[in-house]
Image (cartoon, rainbow, N blue to C red; front, top):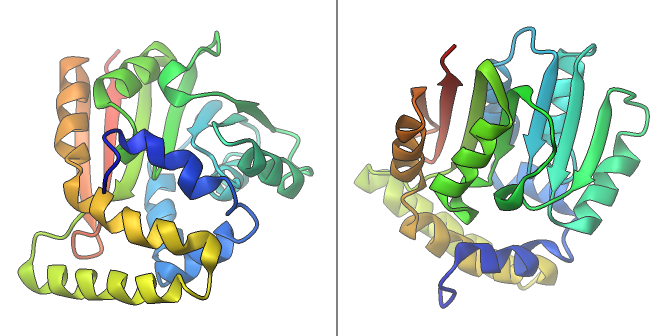
Length: 227
């Protein structure tokens, strides 16, 4: 990967993929995306306000709205066509609103009981994102982050690497995803997002809980703002 900043990959990955994103993320994770998001939802109970960062096409946003039908939910994303896709999909949900904004420059002028973000951490600087989240979080509120991780088990590493080689070949038949399948595995291998976000949360005084999922290929970190 020749990009110095992982965030530089965002336009390349997401400018032309909004129409096929939901199917691709489901098929390429063998349905595990739904399982991972369900594990994120387990962290929610009776929150009145939820901020979903990098909401994309609104997959998690919709699930939050269904679990918390009386909550006020705000979806934020930096990519316009993804946000438009989410708006069109979720028109019937009166408790969801959407804002186009950069999570690293977050400035909403309000605080939330919970902030969620799936697949965002690896693109951002942990200290910046966590500070922004803490500034937008009510006392006792939670930050729930999820992303891919590179398995530590050698056998699973081999399987993981082989699978991405297959996806690389599949990219020839799905041209809008070809570069994603090339650059994404390098990004996942090279990121230390879990350690970086744990440190950033700890430095901000958050109570931290970490959960590794699916043979170490995915991780959820929860940081709670102590009252």
